[in-house]
Picture 1 (cartoon, rainbow, N blue to C red):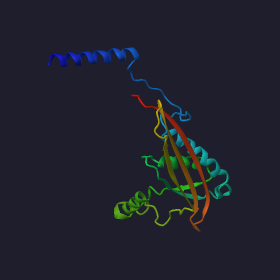
Picture 2: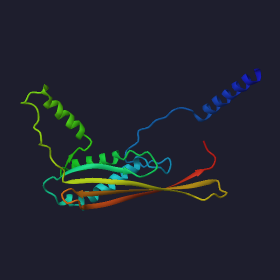
Picture 3: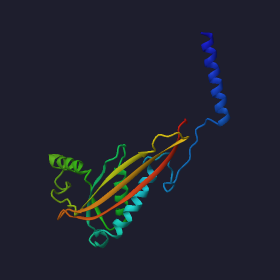
Picture 4: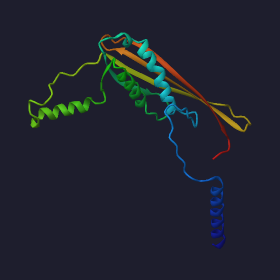
Length: 205
């Protein structure tokens, strides 16, 4: 019992001395969204920004939207995640939509808010709201274009060999499509690729 207590105390003293030596304190810093910061080969916020920046430019310059003068209405149905990771792809479409709205050439209807809109309409016509203040039914604007996409990934690892480090590769591809709802034709499509290599030691924390 005494030996166990002595060992535990000694271990804590060693850890404390180690922390005092290297400085076991929490540090923070503010990171710019433009800063490229990758801890491993996986998808991160830097990739999201690159994807958005790469796809928005041709969408504004080369798609049918670039020639439109009547502020066409777009509905975003999101990006399907076909990777093995849990990636919130709605952040990609949210950023794309924000940039397009700020361009002042397009209008958007919210697919995500349709149930809420229907719920509010039901409430307004349920007898609690005066007829002079409730909105008129069948006045919503229909979308002319639909924006959709798919995110895919491929992961590769080096074959087992005797080495101090192992390398892993991650490939991401996001494809974006603009569909004309009137005729169902794909009016524009583009994609962006992200390929990253990570070199990891076999022994580490």
